[in-house]
Each structure stands twice: as C-alpha cells, then as structure tokens.
Image (cartoon, rainbow, N blue to C red; front, top):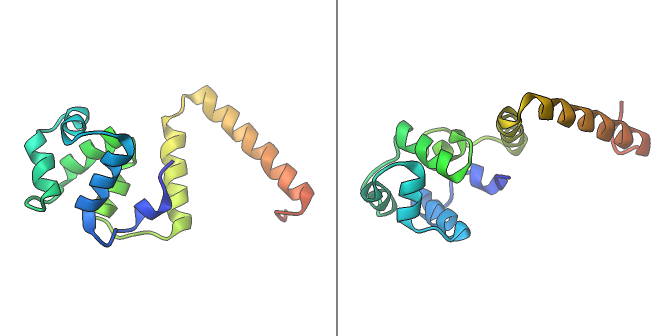
Length: 126
C-alpha cells in the first residue's frame, strides 16, 4: 500500500523521497537501476539533483517500486498533488486493475458484504 504522504511532494524533494524508498526496501541504487531496467548513473544523477525525472524513467522507477506511475510523477513534480480521497481512489484503481478477473469478483463481493455490515452497525448510512 502506498502511504498517502508519498502522494504529496516532500520538503526535501524527489531525491530525498527516493532515498527513503530505497532505505525502506534495503535496496541500493544499483538494485533500483536493475529492477527499473535503467542505468545506475541515471539513478545517481537523479539523487544528486543533476537530472530530472522524465516520463519513461518515472514509469520505470514506479514499476520497480510497485507504485502507480502517478505517485512517482507527483513526487517529481510532473503532476500536481491530489487530495487524500482521490489518492486513495487512484491507489484502489491501480491495485484492482492488477488483480485477475476472478479475484476482482471476489473483492467486489467482499466489499458488498463489508458495506452491508457497516450499514447494519450504523457506521455508514444507506
């Protein structure tokens, strides 16, 4: 799951965010480069602030980190930040799209059951 704080630009910029992502995963810059299928020098230059993040590199990094491209694009200031509810919707859509069709049906069934339970408890109104 993508922390919602990741969907807003960090004070220290993309480089700091990317370094934090690498640290969380205990990845080196070389591992990210390999996972993203891009040159290590590209990652190094981005982290040093010598190079920006374009669409293709942003998509590659997003794929390696298993994030929707929009997360990386927002962190790199390619896209504007979004409010949390929209961020949640984007993440839900992204994760849902990755599921096999039969699993999508199971998840929808679960959501209907969950909503019914919340309605009965009074936490959600019809």
